[in-house]
Image (cartoon, rainbow, N blue to C red; front, top):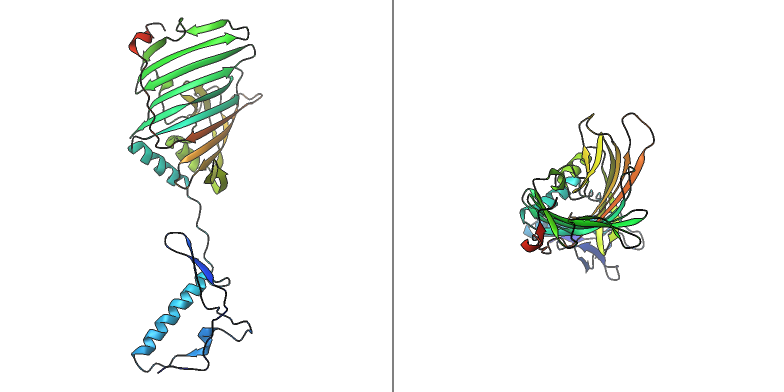
Length: 322
């Protein structure tokens, strides 16, 4: 039989809390490893006499309790906090949405840039297939000094439909395409409207893979629209920056573009590693030097997995105008 110097009394000890496998805190009373008088631990006061089978059982119990104390009690074993998920996890989460042929809604605000750029607000939806964005429906409003532009663009595979106009402050149309408001133009195989791996966008694996190699960091991103987030951020400098109908793009080959420069970016992702918000500041510089132009872009992503119906306009509204 085991002998003890004194019986250990744990009554009145404050219950400790440790995490269950499900992640919820479970309160269970655990013995305080040091009594209030500082007389040493319960483990120190128990002498285990190894005589029969029950001595091994007693030893097993004490080892389990010691393990729990090292995790649950302040001053026990120290465990490092888990590292934030890397951009590799974000890319995998996005590609899972591609594989499921899912969708997401977005809104964009873009301000500044080279002299030809206007401040714009855009909103719409992307629909995916395994290779990436397969269809997009985007409504864009641009603000100029004396007029407002409005356009809507639908791309499904390589089929592209668009309508737009610019209206002055007095209500007159400065420009329309097609010439009848409400009609649509049609085109095919326009490279500028097709989603690509060169777009500066928080859900573009091509961009995320680029910035992952340029000192990207991760931190607690706080809460965004009720969702706890991780913030990934960094800066990457590219030799080419530009705009096409699908969005802002980057190039990695020297000597191709008239603009290049640094992109300072931030990406907030939820617990599922799916992007919730993307922010970028682009500094457009010319290879020969001179003053730089700054553009800021903010994109919000909502409704991951919520069905987004993107269809071509009715045939009777499509014209042959270019």
